[in-house]
Length: 311
Image (cartoon, rainbow, N blue to C red; front, side, top):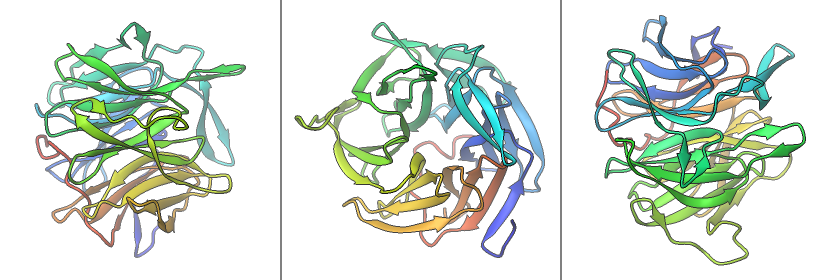
């Protein structure tokens, strides 16, 4: 699995996602199947920071240095060909929620469980804007004979304000912002479509008319059986989308051109984030096999808002 390009930093993780690069060089991520927030130190040491219960998913550092976690409430799991993968809504599903984790004390506070009377079903990924608010996707939940619609939301860190940005979406997953902060990107898992929304004000986007199903502008869609997961944006505005089944990182231009697909040794590369002094180290969660990998990336990643606020 190791190579001059791809280095395995940690293994034995239980479906890791949501990697966040910290100022001390460590990576904080979630282990969805273990229901923990976990830190991976540069020497490979693995330490549990907090036990969240449910299904911690996407994570991001906020303006106060705390970690904000999308908790999907839990999945059922299957192991196939030595790969762990999530399936249906967990039998002990605990409800979708947004949580604030103090990385120093380990204290967890639930900020949101609903929006405008609609319960959060499966919060998935999160990104902060320069105003200190955050966008997040709710993927919904799948049960044997039914599924929830997904949505995009915007919320404040004090737990007092949450609003729907766009709905309905089909399994929205990764979210990210353009370098100028004016475009919100979201990747739909099941359709392998990348959508864009032009931001007019914090939490407010311009909606396109029908036939857009939710007001978004289609950037790109992949052929064949591929599925989108999380995403990261580089300094040039290229959207790097973790792509399931085909097991690649797909680089897509803002104009919608598929620039390249970089193969990973796992059909479930779920997340990518950028770190290092020059933001040219890509940290990639190989979730099916339970690994965190790193490699040198040809371009620098876009600096995330408030990313340097915690160690």
